[in-house]
Amino acid sequence: MSLTHDQLVALHVQAAQLLEFKLRKVPARVFPSGRKPTITDVYTNAESLQTPDIHPNLRLLFLFENYNKFAVAGFRARKKEQDLVVSMATFYWQMDQQHSLSYHHKEIRFNVLLAHIVLETPNSRAQMDPELLRFLQVFIHAWLESAMRSGKYDLIQWTKGTRDRMSKAVKALEASVPPQAFDVEDFWIRASSMPSDEYKKHGPAWAMQYVIYKEKEAKVIDKMERDYDAQESLKHGDFFAGFGKLGMGDAAPGYLSEQMFQQPLVKALLTEVHGGMVVQDPETVEFWMDPSTAIDLVEGKVAGMDDINERIKGMSFLGASK
Image 1 (cartoon, rainbow, N blue to C red):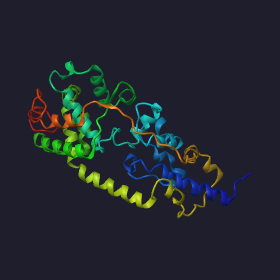
Image 2 (cartoon, helix red, strand yellow):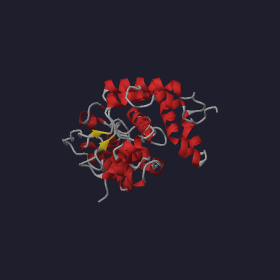
Image 3 (cartoon, rainbow, N blue to C red):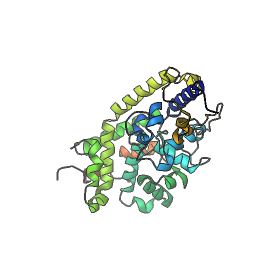
Image 4 (cartoon, rainbow, N blue to C red):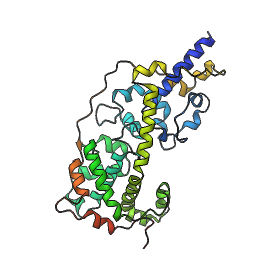
């Protein structure tokens, strides 16, 4: 039996509600357009929503179908008690600021910077726990499967106090890094065009340079994201409290049909969200470096370590005058 017009409209309202709800933890910057998709995009232009930086098996259809798995984990990537693909997707969709590959997240910038400092410290690799060495190398090369799921180490996480201290310590390094010679968004385009041997030799220094450049513009980015989050919070209200109101003000398009709701992406979107789910407690993990030690390292207070500023001055940076 064919669906009536009222039934199609009810499905449309449900789909609009679920779309806004399921994308609440996903930043708009993940999408190629720089904005979150509308229900019209999902109905009529699904191909435009494909994110080339995300593995095909982890794209929007996977996110919609498996929303409950992300929600029960508190939208965090976990080393245990979580499907590997859900951990990977959490990274790619940037739901967890402590675990992502995005330089938009301050915590990740700090981990990248510290990993390069430690890996490039003379003789440090010979003295390092082999498991930690592998973890850092894998993290730097973005091998998510191994970095998140094997071994005992996890990325450093920061409280507000240690995050502020680390921000000040990183800012102090800016004087040792050459002035920005070109737009920061062009940085890795230029880096990748360099000869392979140069890239291998100076890549760590370039990564540190890039992180510090991004740190300079972080305040503007962070404010924009806070403003966006505040608008979303006002718009939607609390978790399930605002759920029933989403999409109700949108007029139903006249082209609704049963076939439209049979499209794979739309069917995935309509996967039910479970009510009353119990969110898992955060994991207790061993950070690869204590946050206070990390700050002391950047501030040059760790005994036996060369002064970080002096070492940075001796590095070959991209775009710096010879």
